[in-house]
Length: 429
Ligand code: UDX
Image (cartoon, rainbow, N blue to C red; front, side, top):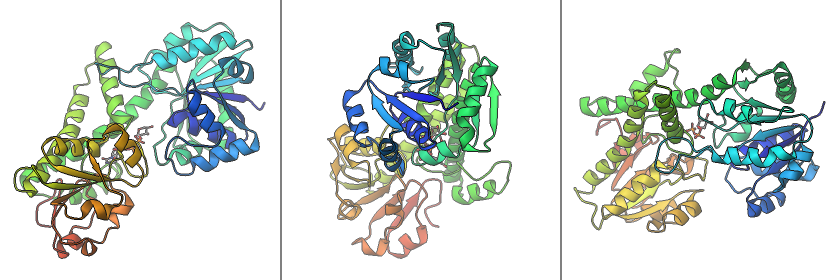
């Protein structure tokens, strides 16, 4: 059977999922309550920066397989399978996740589901959410939980070629439907389990990744104290296939819309369950310390005070190839320098508009060269290729640079006369 699908919530995950399902040949209806966003999407306008997704969106619209609506009535009539892709942000004033968008969407959709339907949750939620939601559904509507692991910058690639598919189901029928839905993806490892395990896989994976980053950043702190080099250390650790080299990139640490909030929400939920995951609080603390350390290193390089000093900030997005500034370590550092009296000039290849809107107090430069010109210190905070490709001999009078992502070649910067400093590495390399 060729299922007709709806995708409810058109954030990062929802737009990607909708466009990819349409690319697989399904008829897809995306839904959001944001009227302007839906109007834009129906005209092929992608509200985010994501490699390859705009083309896929426009191809879906052109083929007639994909369209968007704000009507739950239309969604209920249209779909056999309904994917929930709503945001679960950090709750105001606490660490727990706010699942109210999911509750509202389900309450709005359910009355329009007149025939047997499958609702599939993809959002990251506190364990126990799916059971609670399933208990509130009418007889003819079934729930499954199918977490999504896509990375920004690789959203299309990760959706069409996932490492694994996890299905949390309560019946063989639901499993059959979802196996069929994902069959066009080919031979992907599939783990079929219960709701709670499926919900936990997602947060456990993100907590593991965050822990791996904070682990190497804790080693960077030890390296700084002992005069050792964390980049060589990580390289040597990574050769051990049990450890692996990925996510051992030391530096300014993690940010974005997922890892920071997910580890906090996971720790909060685990507390409720009576299982204190205190190490996750340490993971968070190590991550924050790297931001302070970067500010301190920059202050040291400008002679102990930022007052009146020009500071070039390369990067605003939380990682390269994204315009996402949610919990961006780069902007956190830029703001701290600004508050300490520094004259900050930020450049980012994609996130300038978002940054300017959120932080109008910072200065912005149209090119990296403009940001760097006359700067007393340059901070590389997001490792865009545009920055790692910079020729240090072509940037005017050399001053100092903090490579907070361990992304530059120290020797070429030092040879060009720059004072080069990095996190977790000795001053002289
Ligand atoms: C993450 C997960 O990878 C993804 O599976 C999940 O679905 C959503 O959260 P994303 O937030 O897009 O994806 O970014 P990711 O590429 O994982 O990077 C997260 C942060 O960690 C970035 O700020 C990045 O700069 C940082 N990072 C990553 C490091 O500091 N070092 C590394 O070695 C890798």
